Image (cartoon, rainbow, N blue to C red; front, top):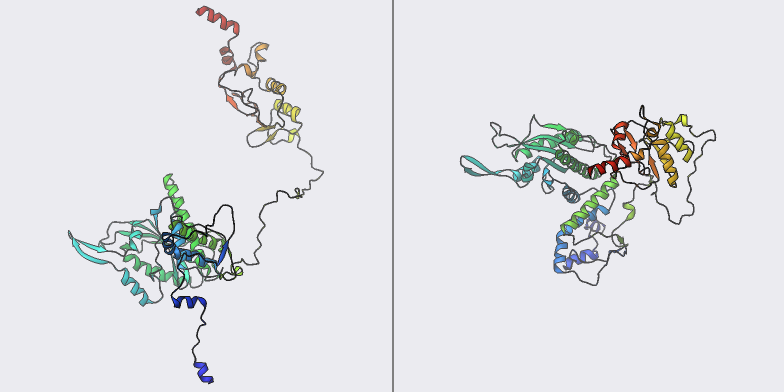
Length: 501
């Protein structure tokens, strides 16, 4: 009896799901489930009482694999990333480029391109091998595998691949070239190749394997690789576990797509230099942020593929929905700072104390970092008190809170803004205010503002009276003699008009 019991095969206990599959009544994709509830909001209407149309159910079935790529990212924090998630996320990130035809992001998860087994690689190469269809006009006609269609016709190739459980990102630049004697079919050339591997263990083994097999893969696409190909090394922080490499591969791919946007911008602006494309990935890995960005890209890929017939929602999972919050929680050793937000009705409003030594004295006028004209300093101190003139990078500043009275403005204009006296002129001419020089309607009166910016007295640069609050200045190249000659007295103007009559 004991021997028979030992040899008895272990039979998996039938669950409700297995029974449903056997009976053939499995629920179709897209049907509403009771696995979770949505967080209520006034911005959405649920509409559970209206059944889904047949077209909507058919659409949901088509996008269900993309939905799987998002759902599987919410099972465990340390679960390896699948091909399905990286493929859909990169597709969505690729569509955000202003020039999408600059890079190729083919999905090759159904092709075993970089296996350790030579027999498996030969089988893959048999599928990729070109086929000849006779000749036309003395030229052979070849048909290439569909995977080469975009790789050959776009400048860059972005290819995250899995090699022995480790995710590696391949970046290549492919350019047209003249056929080489002896190899007339090779009309493309891989000028630059970067193999970005975040795992230090067996890095050299994977690098040699990828380089050897990549040459054969390019050769079947009539793309030349050889001694003229530059193999770039893009450095990055190492991964500690194998499951991290998928998230890092997505982050690296996303960064390279960002550099594609920079390259498009620089080319539009005729800015030279493209070495930044091969710069190191200088960033400390934030695996949780990578997973969240990956999840978001998969969700938006699903929404856009559905024609925006689907939308995002915040679920409240039930106990039977196969959701475990502790599997997604961040490590407890991480110290996150609290969000910088406060309650509107918070009673304690002044919580930061600053101690200032009593030995500290306010700056005196002689200690100001900006050489202020004595007249301006005197007027400012008369209005604001000592230390009113400060430097803000543009010159002295006067803070007017509240605004000055018209009498103060007139006094300020007469005492400070008068132009320098002309040599040999009468005392009356030297006391004229600048208001009589710039009385043209082209200088409108500006309203008073809390701040007045004053420039030190520079020959040819004067402030327009009436716009003291706005800080507007007017440059005058005329000398005082020329300005005075242009100004006509009322008596002279009447005499001129009468002579014309």
